[in-house]
Length: 305
Length: 278
Image (cartoon, rainbow over all chains, first blue to last red; front, side):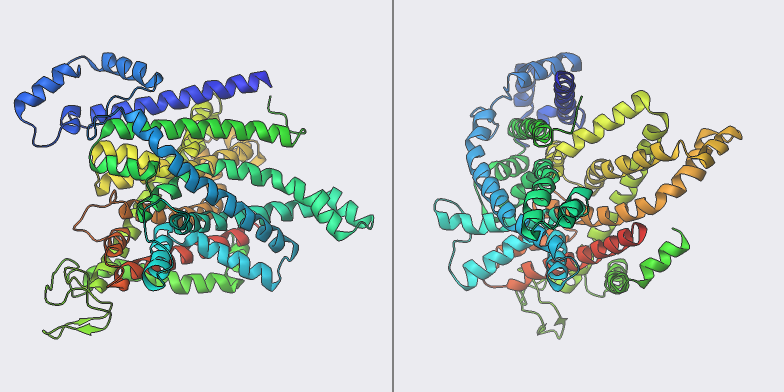
């Protein structure tokens, strides 16, 4: 157990180190970073002054060591656009993204898990075929199109809801709904597969053979065991939640992390991009480690050592 | 793929429906340059025209025009072409990288396996879009960068699949026999291991193709994909969002094209999987 935790920790550090190398290499090897950091109309004198001031004259390993020592302390420098510390800007946007993603994950679980169980119990009936097909359609639909179509229907045509921005609960409905639909298809399919697998296991068939009530068999024996891979899956799919959130935020001008990052890329505000990418990667690595541990806790039969 | 598997696949009516939709869409993508109207030609007297409009000069805009009076039919065809080409090129790159690394990791084990597994685990934790933002934020958006980013992040599932299958096959008698008879390692891998992994690569590759097309569309929507003036489905949609209240067709139609393409690909992948593992 301890050995596993240690291995996991080492791997996480390696992953993060790899990411620093990637980010550093990309800024420094893909052209002149000074040109990248300064506006295109900067004069030659300004460029030279900036180069000396920022230490861009030093050799690459020295610069990487400096970058790393800053990154470890989560110091990514000041935003080029806004001059505030990049980390602060990123943290400021965190709650908006967490609200959007948290509500969408909760809604997707509340709708998707029961639907998945239903399709597994009514296997090969009209219910199963319809819901499974709709789930596949959902997985094939671009998330930004769902968002834009929901704006067309509910904001432009019906005028029930605001088309973008934030501030009231009405502003939440369309972005959360869009992200929920994005996550729903996959969740239904994972739950269905997992439930079907468990229903076919010996202990479930034994319970049925013993003459236990169908309802008891389904909920006590099958459902709880089927949920283990589903929970793992939800944790592992966090990267899709973040990916979907970046696009959803852009559609609805939702003031979250994703929108900040995309705008930072447009503005070539590299410190903000670095800080954002780093913090999200860190959060995802922590979540994934926690999911692995929860797996251990949910199913004592699993030994990770 | 073996004959019986192929027959089982063909017996499924969904396979035929998927092909019936997919083949014309792919043909439209390939033949897009033959469409007589340029996707970038502007007709400033016929802007934001609804589908079916005939301009003063007698040109028919079957699917309408955008804010610069550009023919949406031509733009959608060329956007579809960009989606399919970028998706297919990225898929080829991902297949090449993933299969090679998977074969090496599964066959040799040891430190090669440790490195490949570490890399796959890393990439599986991070959202693709985040990596794309990091890369494109530094290097700038271009078609080559887009294909490289998609290809060099999309190989993970192939590597995992091929590694697991190679690991299993390594101890099979026919593989051991080839080895004992003096067939060199590359020959064994290519002639005895790879053909047995191929059906699974076909299933996984089909599903991955759909995912790559959607990823490309998402990046284009964010303005991080193929740069203008080349039309992309995601880019047309993003441009149309501004005109949603006056010209619904600009944002609606590219999404329908994408949905048709990706749904057909995913149904095909599903039927292939059902046939390969009944």
